Amino acid sequence: MREASSYIFRSIVRFVFFLIMIFAIYLFLRGHNAPGGGFIAGLAAAISLILLSLAIGLDGVLRILRIDPVSLAAIGVALSLASSAAPMFVGKPFLTQSDWHLHDVPLLGELHIGTPLVFDLGVLLVVIGISCKIIFILTRSMRGEGLDDDELRKYSSPVELAIEKDQGEVYDAD
Image (tube, rainbow, N blue to C red; front, side, top):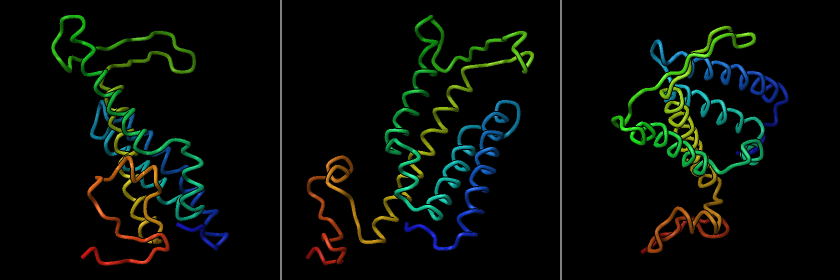
């Protein structure tokens, strides 16, 4: 995605990006007492990143993220798996919930933290990572850029043929 040429659009999107991210945090934290949680918060955060890529360009968003979206998703899977399997090490069943109640936390008072929050954080990271990677790859493909050599090695089968040539020309594999 190229950077938008409209100054007004870029300015509004940067403001809306932060509003959507705050809403995503609200959805994430609300999910333990009401509908919401990691999945819907991850979708909201991914939408804000995709919207930001329309304003500042794909390269700008990748500089902000500083991590490959697939790596972000892998960290999320590891986090969710760790929070799910941790109870097994103390003789409890898989996915057993544990809660901690912290009293007299400055500015917050009482704070209740549980393993479902950690699990949902992993889900949030998976959804952000996979959603952004799919959209970013499709965007680069539509621009005729395709995958770079590192991404070809990581994400494609050795027997696949690329759709695009180096100059972005589409060709028939037959």
